[in-house]
Length: 137
Image (cartoon, rainbow, N blue to C red; front, side):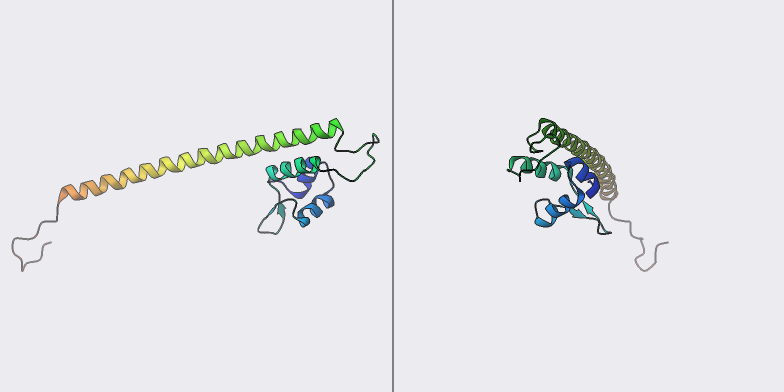
């Protein structure tokens, strides 16, 4: 998850422009317990690709053209998208590994309880004293 500043840097836009896009509902975000904004890299990549496909207001960039039509800007968006997807893949692989470890722990615990239940069943009921009026020690 990216902070607002990190996401703005990756999207090559200002923090305030990114915040306006969030307020308009163009980008989905999560809020932490402290109230700060966290943006999923895949959500940022989706926004960047939709932004590049929409015709934007004509702005004069440093080279005199629209910033989204410039090949360097497209490459930067593509690189940011690839980097975000690679990070997401690594996080998902880590989650898969954690789930596999939890599964193995649960299997071991299940086998332990199963063995204990089997021992209790094979042992049979507890023996009663021969004298029913006398308590067993």
